Image 1 (cartoon, rainbow, N blue to C red):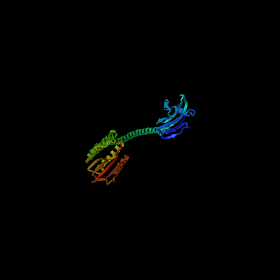
Image 2 (cartoon, one colour):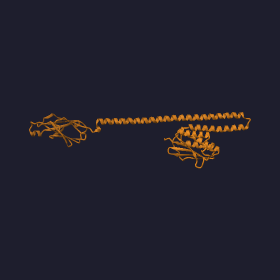
Image 3 (cartoon, rainbow, N blue to C red):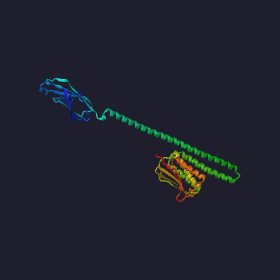
Image 4 (cartoon, rainbow, N blue to C red):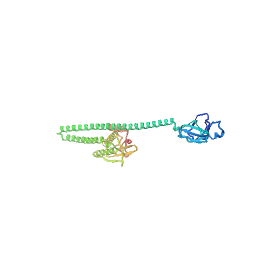
Length: 355
């Protein structure tokens, strides 16, 4: 027995002196040629030799080829096979030894071990990277939430402490005025003066208490609450001072939350601006405006007073410095300028944090 040739498509390989062939992964047809080497038999007997073949690794049974001396295979899958062929002479005796040929069909590159290993490593790396990114993002969110909560608690404690100091000072002043009134009980004019001072201090103390409640209530951490509270303060203050007052607010305010620190600093700067209208500008008319711009809001106080040209007074300079610092602490801007028709315009420009 002899395997004398292998054909792959149009390429014929002489395999008479080899025991193995390797085929490319794009093979579509494989023909294996074989023959009998019984030179002592007559020529007619040679033509009557019958063959059987089997491709181990694919075929479970032998294929009877009759007198055909070629085996045809179409689109063999990647792998290793053993082609076996045996022959039967004219007497019906089979040559069980036969001939063999090792056939290896190479896999396409995407089915090679190195590519599969690289793909698995890639996906494992991608999975690990995704898990790392998700875990890191989650951890950052948790840390950000904890940091924000800590800042909120710290700021509320600071606000409460500041207002507590102010409240304590007011109550001490009321007590001292009460003692002075008691001492001057025989002087009606002095008693009346002390009573007026007590009334003013008590009113200021009431406002301080209201600020404590407003500052510590987390439900007020919105632009709407800040605008409403600021306008209510301006309305009450200007009414007592006899200043005509008008407020202009947008019909719809941003739903974005405002940190207590921002709310507190903006309100105190606004409060200082309102007080300056009465104490320094000597105005008869005032207007509070709230304007929304991309990424920020602008709270302004306008009056028809003497204007900002004369800021030589030390108290006024200190007040402006404090307002500018409070806005800088919350990454905002403080601006003071003359009005179009005279007076003063104070603008508090405050960024709105993204949700």
